[in-house]
Image 1 (spheres, protein in one colour):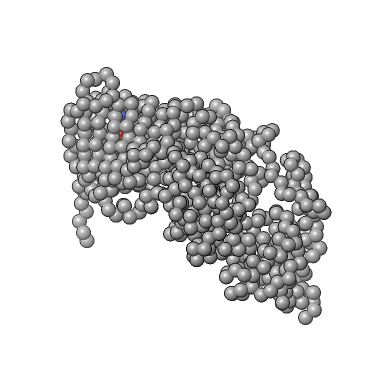
Image 2 (tube, helix red, strand yellow):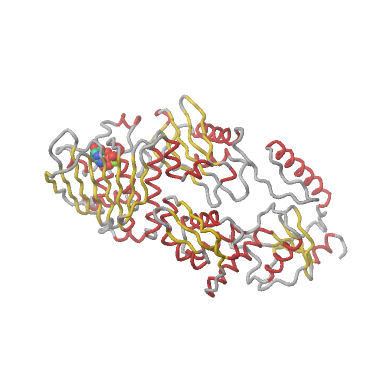
Length: 580
Ligand code: ADP
Ligand code: MG
């Protein structure tokens, strides 16, 4: 048996720091929160090497007196609460007094501060959680905290970090979330000496446009609901502009940006039946909850809160989002092209759309019971996933059903093909082959198209540019946050280049899981370019798709792992019809 020892303070602080300071973005978040708590009107964030070399946050807030400044880097030293009771009604971002000491435990921290009323400035320096060095120093009113060489004494933690581009994207995200929560302050973010963005103090609507881009902000509809103990306001994207990759929420509770699966589900619930397939919500939500219904002290990085009544909160948010989306003018269905002789597509109006859905689904149900194969000998044979390997046998096209599946005859049975999954496979293999052989066919645009990038998009640009070039995009930075598109892969020439690029950038901002950027771009581009379920296809289009699919190396699955086809064999048909 070993002997139990109390950890020495420096080690204990480093462990505690691990909970607060997970990555550079956590440092940025804590420092910016402190600036906001100090009443800053302008906050300047400077970053070098994605925050590992340097994070410097300067503000024009209330600063600290010479007596207070050394206390700021001590554990559990805070000016924001005095007693446990105060925890019930925290009105500041900070309240634990843990951030600065935790950061100082795993970096070289240097703090300069002066409160506007005093002559004397103070400088406090701490290295790796050691003793603080305190000096009088000339300083402007406000506070500047510089954090250098993050994790220099905890190398293990560096191993858990993602690529610099990704870490910087997380920093950008942290600042943007706080900027949305505090529109009245000016935020400026610089990386490697370059300006990433400036958001001048603004009204909330304008801040939304600064952060998400004007184009997207205009595609959002105002959310407002509840009242009294639980009130909600914010914005939700109109369904036709919903995101292609994953749900994105900016959630705030009593002014604090948080994460909450429950609230994200509530947002999603508000979109029920309004989202096109494969599209996801984007929402900015501000909840105001009576303090007695809320506990903010449950998460080391203050990223989560607990509500005493989840159900009420859920219902309030879901209803407010839904009402906003159903308000006149908010929902516009994008209906697929109707060809002569086709089953009418969902019509523009919502009521008609619902009526149509009900009619077709009850019709299908009646039809279904009539044709469902009776079990033979107690067992009905289910159609099998096509289990082949290698190339597809020749197929004869029969047609399209439900605007989603192609029917084809193979030598020994019937094949049903999911048109989207199959087309994804075709486009993806084509792009990937071109990348591999370096033989990319590009189509030059008649007029180069500028694209205004938001910071998250700009954050993955270093990764994007070489991968995009390999795919046949010709894009170049064009001053500030603008990208100029000169050419796109020939295979995608008919698509809106702006849309293509945005989706590609989006795909790179997702967690990577080891896939290289070119592959992720090829996948995202293929997925976006492929025909969708619900798209009517002409006979020649279907023939081409079948022929192309037959030519692919792995025709049986799409890269999401879904099957591209199912197979009804001759023996299965024979058993269904009691022929054998
Ligand atoms: P907390 O924010 O939970 O109080 P911190 O460790 O983040 O804990 O900060 C400790 C204290 O240092 C704060 O309570 C505040 O008094 C002071 N402080 C930190 N940053 C600033 C700043 N930018 N301006 C003024 N005071 C600050
Ligand atoms: Mg703090």
